[in-house]
Length: 241
Image (cartoon, rainbow, N blue to C red):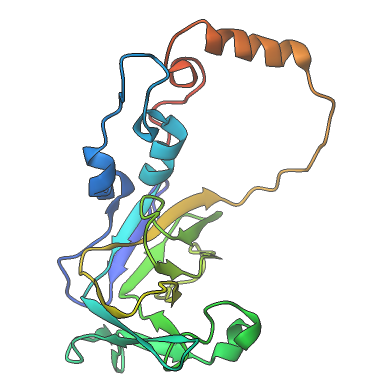
């Protein structure tokens, strides 16, 4: 019987590069950013924004398990094409043999020329073969998304949701390269690749209603009664998740 309140990551091969809580992957630009930019209370950086910081620390993050180089060259006067390189001796071990680090889908699966970036890859839409099987308790699924802290990255996975309480298999990650410069770019082993956010499958009914002005004014009065951190002090649920 699966234990309650546990998300399990089981590797398909031997690796020392495992998932961690997402807060361990704060990017260097964020770590080095001062919270206070000036003497006044409103002169603050995004580091003081609890919702942004919490988005980066939500759930768990899977780091990239091997180096991947992206070679971007101009195929003709108007179009850049990306190709990919990795150590071909490295494979994701599965029952029945190894699987390559990258596989490819036809660009037509993403709309072909009608979809931006779908035809910008030499062999089709690239897909990373994941070495991880993920299991959640009954009634829980996982959102697989780009790590929220990598806002400057040109490497973008195609996000998805998997019912990990029933599906026991590795979840693979198609992606696109959105860079518009020629050159070779390394996506290093350890790059925060996938942010995994477990959630309980519960339906919420949509309701559009009249604004409660008294409730709204009470919130505003609380926020403006302090010089800083109003949301954090009065409304934020510390330690959830």
